[in-house]
Image (cartoon, rainbow over all chains, first blue to last red; front, side, top):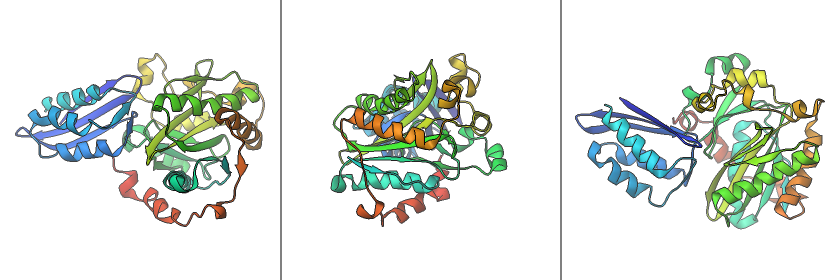
Length: 87
Length: 242
């Protein structure tokens, strides 16, 4: 299991569980704001079963029409990649 | 602009805020002032329960929690020390601009009470750098819901017991929640009542939003759909999703 916390004005805290290069579990937490919030749930859902190398592509696609406040979109993607590679 | 003065427990309060947002395309903007009866904790939509609430202490004190539909951080809502507001408006401004405009209602409320409060971006109101109010926002169907606190007599000992300190506090050189928050009673050095804050808030929000607030009964809106939303806020599936 890998974990990555990035703090800006708010924070994003990501936990990723990987088995043989495939994502088994993802939790994107923190006190940031997302509009709409459901995009973050969708991102978690879409990442399960994906290969770790697909994290950036999937995250960029799902977050395209999502406004994030308190952290940057790039922070969420970076946290996902770091937590995935820490496994 | 419609003013609603209806309070309940945490699940009811969050359900009513969400219902007002859902109904907004039909019924238009609303300002609501309320309290949490009994005292409760709310956590941000993306927060993990086990990392934000001291469940053992909250359990001992009989303080329950509910996950909000809005992002942001965990809040202890003291039944006898907090006025909570919610505002539903057309989402015409950016998130940051709307936080500032609506939080100005809190600033003007506190200034009417003689407290030199100021907006602290993104979503706080502070007095001498100590937080006295926090707000959170969500948006759907062209409308925004922003809700937030005005702490007038919150029991900071209880707050410190039931909330786990955010990791970012240590980064700011502040070791505890208590060191970074204040209340109207602390600032004024006297007791403050809910009704005193409420009358200032009606004036303060009216000034900030540029419209007179007119009290409405729940029956005039039709709150039948609240039960279904309330059931979600009472469910383990929702509250423990993270």
